Length: 305
Image 1 (cartoon, rainbow, N blue to C red):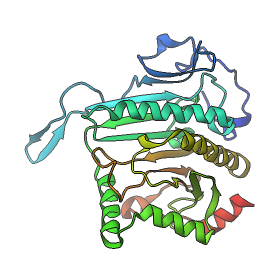
Image 2 (image 1 turned 45 degrees about the vertical axis):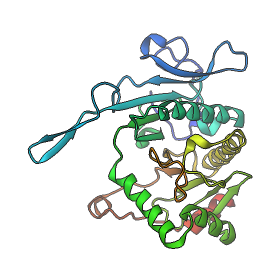
Image 3 (image 1 turned 120 degrees about the vertical axis):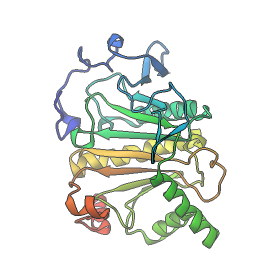
């Protein structure tokens, strides 16, 4: 199945007999983890299935073992695929707000389900859209990985948020939100519950952050009004991606707190979206520094115009 750049306009059937995510092809799936029923309650509007080729598996133990000078552990965890729609020929940039709300409902239901398991220290919800972003199937889907360990990258981010709070007595993301709302140079969209903007030092062209206005560390704590406002924010993002960037490949992640930190005042969850418009090359790989060929303020002006 080939990807095309403007997926909203692709002429594909609503059902593909070879696609494991299309209704009726359940024999190609592993087991179903949970479902969001449609308005009639007779079928599903979104569902989560266990990944047939998981990065982590819920068998074995969570303990580490010494192997000479090295430390090893089992790949313990859980890996779900969230099928965002029964329709094969639709992508997020072609979804109506009510369809995006169903996607967010499925995210929240699956996230909350795994968050109830005390063995998981980190739950990462992400989407790979397009071949260059790592997607292997066209049917609209996202993924959720629950891990018994927390990577250093995320520990470092949480430590920096802690450091800022210890020095300033405030949440760094709340301060970023206040500044961006006042400065307006990189602000793109806002509603009652969310703000969408390009970060001050964006790593790639047109990187976007979707940030809840209410201070909360855990995506699990989102309420019904915020789900609707998040759907409106995603609808705006996908529309501008379609109109201005011709539906680029992209990755997004919901960056939520690790276990036991949902009540800590320094953490603030957010959605980060990275369009795949440039290629990370030698200097960036070797140095860990990112080269962004465009200014965030110019990118914001282009998306607003």
